[in-house]
Length: 378
Image (cartoon, rainbow, N blue to C red; front, side, top):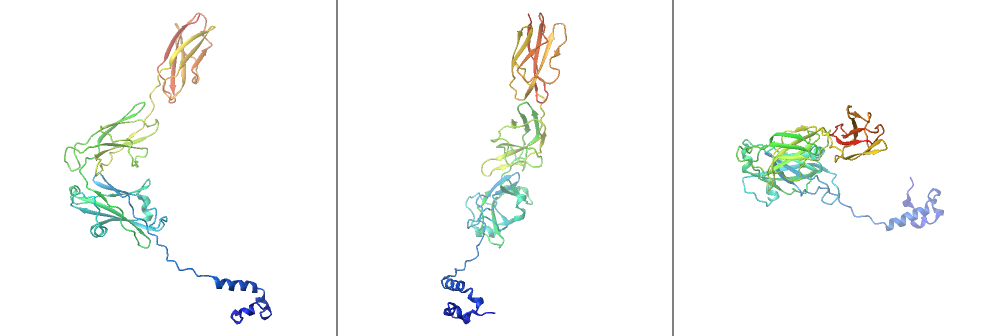
């Protein structure tokens, strides 16, 4: 093995004193030595710490006699980088017999007194996703169910990375449950041409058997999958009466409806569990209106019929009927529908009187009542 340390820097510039194999690399070696004299070694950098930023949008609402917790999944670390090292989420509950106080409990005191409800590994978070929000349920299991109405519950969550590091607790969500009614019963539906009408029977007592029932209003939920309902109700605002008209439906589709009672819309927001689903499969059995302004005009021994359409949007075409005195009615187009708003009767005869009828037929084959016109062909 060659030992470059035997040669001085002057020797490196005198090719006669260097073996041939090294003489070929003299210029390169000179550049390397010059660069080595100028290079500066960078200061060592500490390893980057990736700790998820604490949640700030934790919210808690009463759902029946449970508490639903909603929070956004962690997206960014404390240094602003995307979260890639999340290991788990911890959920805590602090129950106290106290008046509702919006001031948060100091973190050390909270962790010392709170109960850890659940630890959710990051691999299981998809099981709790509802849209873009994580939803967890606290069933409030106490020997005496009435206990939940005498306490206030504070919740917080904590994000833990794979090195068991955390940036601390989220905001604290506070809820003091109130006794609310069970869901409504006797849900019924009536299918009309323009809407599906829903009615139901309000509950008579609250879940703790107290009365009168605490009813601030109702929410209607609709789904085409009876096993999964959306988190947002169908009604844009809270319903104050036990009735609703769904005007956004479509015929020939199947819908499941469920109704809940909103017992309190203030603090806390409290909503019952939904009623058992009611399946509705609306069919279009509603014929269109008669055509408008039917006129029969003679045309050299022939008859021209003119009309304007009815208001329904699903009209597919028209049937035209003619009756001659003393003869049974006949349909002039035996196959198919007339899709125009006029018809020329080429088989009419001179000196005869005819009664014409025009009916509208919709896309489901429903035929409406006729528009009528009489004409005597001169």
